[in-house]
Image 1: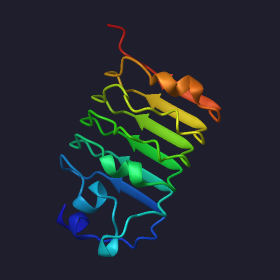
Image 2 (image 1 turned 30 degrees about the vertical axis):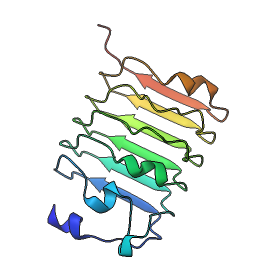
Image 3 (image 1 turned 90 degrees about the vertical axis):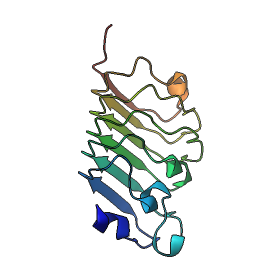
Image 4 (image 1 turned 135 degrees about the vertical axis):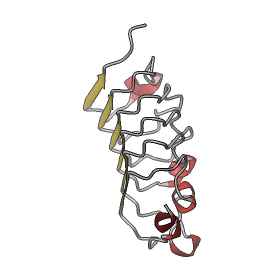
Length: 151
């Protein structure tokens, strides 16, 4: 945990994968999406957060990753909320939420995500509905969903 907290990646970082980080929240530089010197990770095009079983909330600063094309969140079983205010992620092409057992409904308006081509939401049993603006995405080519609870 201390190693990742002390890391200060270069602001030009293009891809970041955090795997098996065992804490309720991500390190401060990830929560703020900043690199060395506090500069924003404005060139980040791929973010994957995997098997962070204790993580409860995804960083709200995701909204600042304007170059992001791929966002993959999988096996973060305690994550309960997906950030709102994603309207600046107009470059996002792939969104994957998989194995997030406690994730609640996505309440963010995803209509501004005009480049989104593929959405995968699997094994997120606490979700009871999909974002209403999902049907308005002009570039959406592939949608994979389920299973969901039937209760």
